[in-house]
Image 1 (spheres, one colour):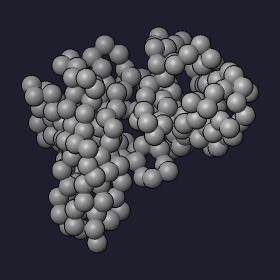
Image 2: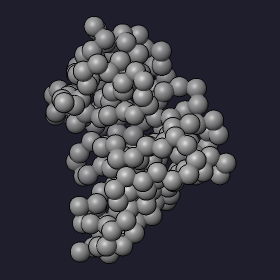
Image 3: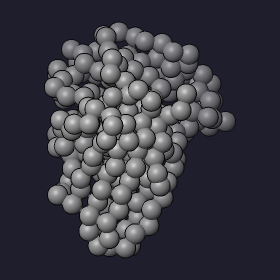
Length: 111
Length: 113
């Protein structure tokens, strides 16, 4: 069983729509959760982090965390073509500081 | 401020040769990580440094891989007797002591021919 699983995608959304990305994790003791954006040929860029249950908003991005369900999501509102990228969910383990990554969801925003 | 830097950006080497990859973390970041990203395996953890010590080396795939960090700053990842399966992008990330967020460098693309 993979430690971090993401909806496989690819996800295609029209410009201006909401893109919804989901991630589940297996380590119930995990406390720290991250979303990275990765453009083709580039390295991952941290766009959101969340440590407490509930919602966290930053601009057009909202991260949602539900530790009881071991579920974290990312919403991208008013999607723009520049949001087209692969989004990686990452979870920090309960006993260490390393990140476990999901396989990523590729998002394409259609103009 | 300056982000994480890595060198070289690209490295092509022949099978059996040794390679050294360098990472310069964000100034003041005490924690440094090496990850590897390949098409078949996704992004996988290799090793973690806190200061100059490596409390977690669990991700190193074989004893051909080693890493060191000196002066609490620059780190070098060394791969001896490279194999074709070592071809990947090697990513370095750093983290400040009081936070959990990791910031990645641009990576080194290693190709073993």
